[in-house]
Image (cartoon, rainbow, N blue to C red):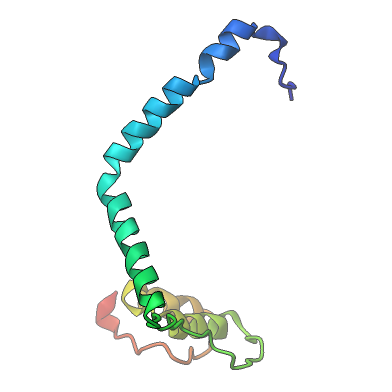
Length: 123
């Protein structure tokens, strides 16, 4: 590709893209005014946390959901991998089970563990 070459631009043009101290200050003032409510709420939270810390009150640590540490053997088939993924991701309302049954159950001749039974009237 073509390398960037700034020699095509003169210094006056480049300077026109760079804000002066006054312009930067004005832009900061505008931003602070537009976000005043957020900044005030953050300052209130900070003051409250400092007051609580001074009184020996600390917020409990947030609990994070742990990922399953159950060691599983790799899936032997694509159907098994799909069934495991559907169980762990809770995607049941977004899955076309008829298509999965057609793909894995009938074409490959295997029963897909974990997939709900699909009636003939779904097609």
